[in-house]
Image (cartoon, rainbow, N blue to C red; front, side):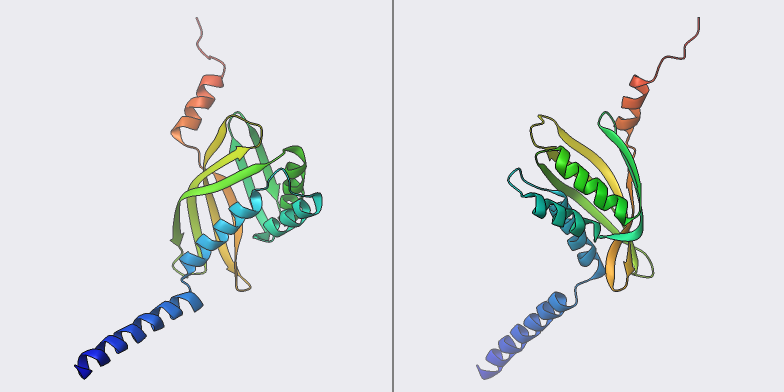
Length: 180
């Protein structure tokens, strides 16, 4: 009976030790996922958010990006924007917060692929965004490249994944080239 009790206690201690190890030393993939969750949270804002809070969140959002980040967003029928550098990300985030009443951003189906060096990662996922006062939801496939810089996982590149439905949308909008 004593030996069974000792085995149960030992197994519990090992389980707690493994759990503590994963809490204190999370895997790079888990850290990247946490970074992406932070980006989605900071990109979102409510109508009742004050101007100082909006500016602070725009600054905090830009802090998730490297100083030389490259952003190339193309949402057909909505907007196309290219940004180079963290300062442009800050300005664009602050401008967007002043132009729309609210924004709710979610990253769905996140797939993280770590580089062989475990210091770089690529994340592809679906962005689901709802702009306050707008009936339609924005749904877009995205790809983020992250690099571990100074002990932090920072986003170095953001791009839109051009899906087949986007290409079909562009083909329908293009003028016909058929000649008689």
